[in-house]
Length: 333
Image (tube, rainbow, N blue to C red; front, side, top):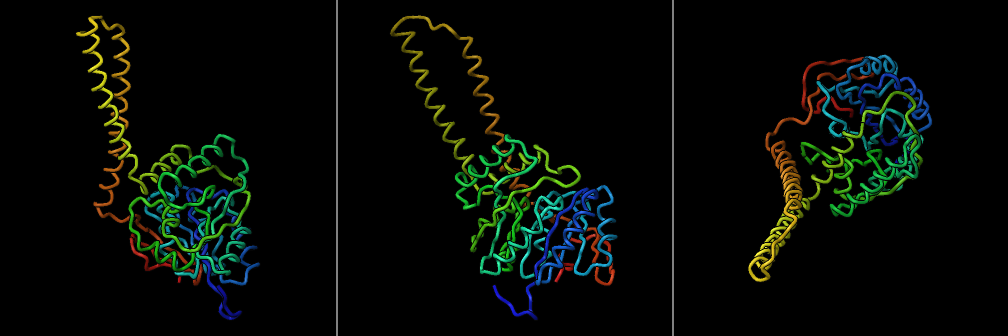
């Protein structure tokens, strides 16, 4: 993408925040240096995902003298993926960069993404060559999941990446046409296609505060990603059930043969109790799999809004507006 000096492109940084008051002063210092180093118009959209600390108040104080900064606050915590989705819905820039507030997604890398985007790419994602302050087990499980997701779902999703990426205006418009109640953003953007490229970097550790993504939420996100893009678990459950049923029929024939033809007793019936427990647990597991799909269908058909905006604030002119909203009328343009 090219532009004349008088018509520099507009790039919006979408930053979801949840109880991030400790890191905000450092974040604003980095963002100030980043904006001053770029020729493009750089706006910032904070999406406050129901923070219970002073995050929203501190953003207003720090950005009071800035331009092109907007804060959108949810009425409660709706989740990180919903916050990212809201940011993309509210953005009307030429491109958007989704990044975390903890500076694990460095602004310097965001600048390299902009350069690659201006060369003609629609999606530029951050490819992690390494992750600081992360144990080997977490790195191993994350690497296994990304590769499993790619092979299991058939979606050409890049491995060792997160939501840190730049998306162009056409990608944003295509993404806004998707209305899933439980969006798996990185998977959906890969599913959309478009021309993609990578920017390699080593992901640093948090500069302050604690992670808002514990193991349980990561596990739930992983399951949501698999359920969103593949029905293979259901088909696998059916095939396994048929295989077990066929094996049971063969076992019954074998038992009858031993008793009436060989006229010998079969010992070890206690072991059958454990087999019954095993297959009972297997049935409950796949019942849970089917239930998770049914729950997703239930969420989709209810038709509720994915998020509710309780307050919106802009730094330009210090204009503040309050009140519940589910629309996008207060988006940055």
